[in-house]
Length: 139
Image 1 (cartoon, rainbow, N blue to C red):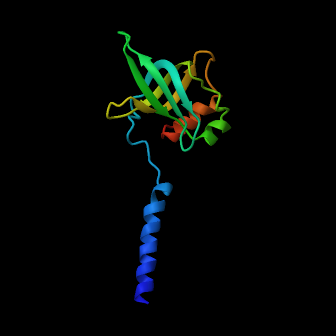
Image 2 (tube, one colour):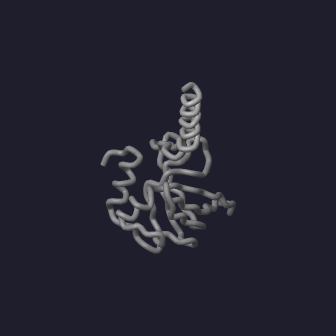
Image 3 (spheres, rainbow, N blue to C red):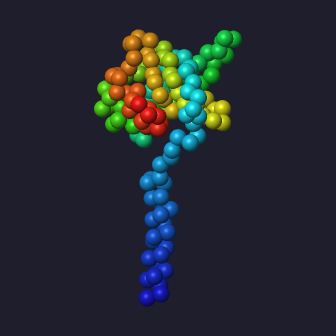
């Protein structure tokens, strides 16, 4: 009986160690939601993948120095319901991204709004509302 209990406990602890990270999720506490920032640049990669779609782009400053940015958006499923596809954003697109930037100064953030200069605004008006609700803004 004692060995059975030890074996069950060891199995349970092992299960938590292996599966604990798969059910975890993070919030947006690393991002400054009170001071959105708009940056313009050229897309280098659009990663349509779970759990969050990622947009990577390069921003040039006034001296020509390039800063590499990475922003996360909603899940592919949520974006698809708003009209986005895996082809909505392409490498080479010129964009303006309004983001909640990282509090620590890293060039990462959570996307609030995306303007692609080959289109007026991507998707439909519901995207901004969906993204605003995601980060806790009130319509």
